[in-house]
Structure formats: C-alpha cells, structure tokens
Image (cartoon, rainbow, N blue to C red; front, side):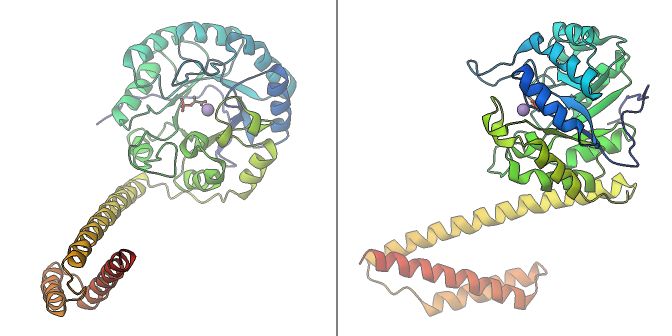
Length: 363
Ligand code: PEP
Ligand code: MN
C-alpha cells in the first residue's frame, strides 16, 4: 500500500531533538475553573506545549456527560492568553470546526469514533479546506490501517499540511490489561508508509488506567513515536469522564521526568519486522495456554470417570506410551529431547495433581 501524504509545518510546534511533543489536559472541559486551574499547573511543566480538552464528547451511550460544547471555547481562549500554551479540541462536525476556528484553537483532532466513517471524515475535510490549523487524526477504533491512512489522506487533500496521527489503541475482543490494545505493529507500519508524518501516542486511552501509563509512554518513546497526549485533570478522581485514566499535573511531571530518551535507530523497517514477530509470539503463547487449559479440562473429566469406576490415577503403561510417542513427535519437530522431557513431565505432574484433587475432594 502506498500513501499520498504531503506534510509541511508552517511553524515548529516543538523541538524533536530536545523532547517529544507533549499535549496534556483533561478528557473533558467541565468548568472554567477546572480548565484554568489545570492549565496553569500544566504551564509550569516546560515540556507541555499544548493544552487539550474535549468540549463535544462522543459518548458510547446516551445519557452520560456529553461535554460543555461551544461554551468552553472562551475558556480555552483564556488558557492561551494567560499561559501561552497552544490549545487543542476534538471536532466531529463541520460546525465544531467553524466554532473552534473562530476562537483560534490551534489544533483540532478527529476522534477514534469519527475516523471509522469516511463520509464524516470527508465532510470535515471540506469544512477544513485551507484552514491555517494543525489537525491530528486518531486511529479508528478498529485495527484497520487503511481507514486511518484514508482519513489522513482526505484531510491532507483539503490542504491541511500541518498534520499528525494519534495512536490511541484499538478495540480488542480478547482479554487484555489495556482499555485499547496498542497493537504497535500498526503505527509502526504507518511510520514506514509515511515516514514524514509525526505520530503522537495517547497512553491514556490505550491504558484506561493510571498505573500502566509510564510503561506505555516509555514504549512509545522506545518505538520512536514523536509525542504523547496524556489526560490530566486538576482533580482526576472527580473527573466527569475517563476518571480512572486521568492523572494530576504533578503525576504527569513525574512521569515525564522518568522517561528515558533514547538515540533513534532511524530504522522503522527493523522495528516493524521485530514487532510483527513479537505479535506472532504473543498470539502463539495465547493459543498454547488455551490448548493447555483444554488438556487440563479433559484430564478432569478422566479423573471423574476413573473415580466412578474405581480405577487408579497413575497408570504407568499409559504414561510410558505417552512419553515415547510425544518425544518422537517433538524431536521430529526439531525440539530438544531434554527440553521435551522436562516439559512433558511438568504437564504430567500437574495432570496427576488435578486428578488427585478431584478424587480427594469427592471422597
Ligand atoms: C478523547 O481524547 O478524549 C477521546 C474521546 O478519545 P478517543 O477518540 O481516542 O476515544
Ligand atoms: Mn478521554
């Protein structure tokens, strides 16, 4: 897949040699006081360059807080005037763009729910035509790189050359510690396809919880991403949206001070292949564990059956047969014999332990 993205920045938003670009601010603007208080604290952290706040909130279900809307635009204007921070809001409708431009918002971003719809993205592209603004485009909720690239191309084709991508993780059906699985191979592939396009990582929406933020932020730096967008609230526990993933300004400061900046390898191809291979390993380990669990389930069934029929657990002949059969299969698959013996013994021991437990529990 080729891409057609033409970037040129009319003014440098940050110095990439010094520190990644940091955007921070609340998930949602709630009150003027909360916005200004958070912004004043953030302005004390020199690495923070852009103040983010959601005004129009795309909530999954109706009835929850949907943002203060255009009422928050003058608050952001005050933030800019008072602190010198640039400002960023999410836009999802042409009228949001019009209002945000009226209030001289510096950065408009498209959210993950918006980017899934090419019709909506096209409408926004038309509303943005030629506007002197920076646009950041989040990945769509589903792991579809083409949809992400398509949105970037549509906005770019409307004359927006001050353009960034934001990686905020992807919806994932399996169990995962993350709110949105990072699937790093996708932003890495985007970097390979469009090396000139800066990518900001949004650890807050990837993690969904505070304790994972430092790990994901560091990972973003290690993978040569260009910046971080983090949700910061003056009183995170009381936040009306995404409370569990927001941190206070001092916590952000601590997180930033602990980031280890590394020399760039300048080789996205290498990272891409490595990440693809690691993803494959993660998947296989998952399958391996599922197969083991399935094996243990059947062991439990056998235990029940043996108990009902009053048969001993360990049957040496069966075990000797299993061992020689599996050793032969495994060595044919180029696995080491000593490794195989250890592994099979471990599985066998656990099977016996489970059978004994079942039989003893039901005595
Ligand atoms: C947000 O940044 O507050 C937001 C709604 O994010 P996303 O579109 O990534 O879910
Ligand atoms: Mn949020």
